[in-house]
Length: 467
Ligand code: CFM
Image 1 (tube, rainbow, N blue to C red):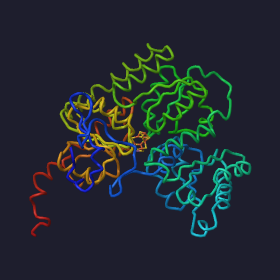
Image 2: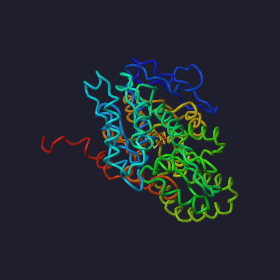
Image 3: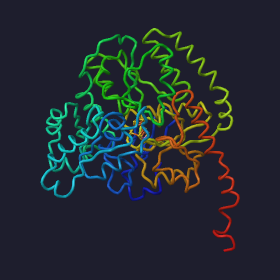
Image 4: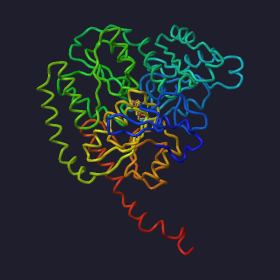
């Protein structure tokens, strides 16, 4: 399978595969099985990838609600990493403010360490309620060799609070995925286990790898709690610095996003012996499995069944209504990583089939999970460039495109119904109740009156009446 748009970019062939009937996959260049992923984008390829800084500041560190989020770098790095991802919390300090050392030309020539120290002290004086300062390194400050770790140490003594320095300079990896790794390691090293609280932690879990996009957590946290499990820490949606410090006390880590957060689950397993389970918290089967697996760990099986039964009774009439409206539709999902495979089953539960699947920065394990679940004949693309996305939409014509803000207007311009699966235009979409919202949004996108109007009139009508 080749794209017409890639005639001058033969390197793309190894990133494109069709799911074969043998359960495996076929490479685009016919050279055998498996799709190339998590490698540097080819020069000339119009990739949509982000950088290591984006993955660290925007995804893992940014949601922590009571830390000063300080970018050490030029002002644009701070502005363009702020406010786009709705990782909500029960307070909005982290969403309302962003801080930057505002490196200008003379700082780049003479070094920015003094300026950074001054910024940390000033920001913590202005916002005395903040519980820590998170500093994110950028390309500019890494290249000139500013020693941010040392500045953080000095600052910690001056302000008496944790100053956490993330070595997440943008050029470090091939995508934002490397930034998740840096974020996990740094939080683990500097915060987790730094206090030892007293108390009973025997029935506690951490939700690891959920970022509370548009309050997703509100859909599933009460269900875990209804089974008799206490949620100690969230990594990192709606979390405070104090919660991160004590997360090593939990009995079990429940890992949702397995791309951005398995690192910390592994480190906690090694150091503290904390076991973890991998779950998906979207869709009926997966959400039920997550509750059942967690319950089995604590011997709460009967409670889990009770909760699941009560929740299904609430949503099934609506799910059945939407399913008959959505059945038979073919979907193109393009997400950053895991959400592509997390949602294949959920869409099936709504009667739809994923025939085109792509991720921006998925690794081998993400693609294995996609190929395990996806239907025969489906097209899988690693890190699709914009012309490839346009070609899928205009030549293969999926009924629905699920992706993010970068792709939204491409979809609309090409007349393809679209739902925002990254930041959600409405949401939340997780849990049982979120699935109803998701189904409703898909139904609205597919059956919006605009599609009929477009097909019947607009294309054949003159651009201006009377012209
Ligand atoms: Fe994990 Fe995420 Fe995702 Fe992700 Fe992201 Fe995201 Fe995503 Mo957008 S942490 S990998 S880096 S599930 S912001 S909340 S939706 S690309 S598939």
